[in-house]
Length: 127
Image: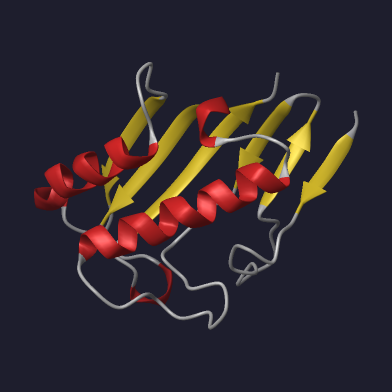
């Protein structure tokens, strides 16, 4: 099995013992991205929409480091601390993804690292 660790300075460094992403064959498995500013390592200021944008920007940076793009993502896992904000996440997601959309799960959680309100993980298949 050929395993490649994906890392970029354009996304936040891992805050634990894990990689930003791992590529096996032509499939890339992403660790969760929370709305951390890559330069400061702190949660971005602003509302939930700002957090979702930052997390998707981080996801995009890791995808590009793996020689892919958001268009190559086939599955998303979305984690929210307040499922009442589902519409906000959907609106921002449509800024980053176009049809055909990836498969997706959306789960409400009691908490996320560093007090984030949103996290996204993904699976990407490269051409």
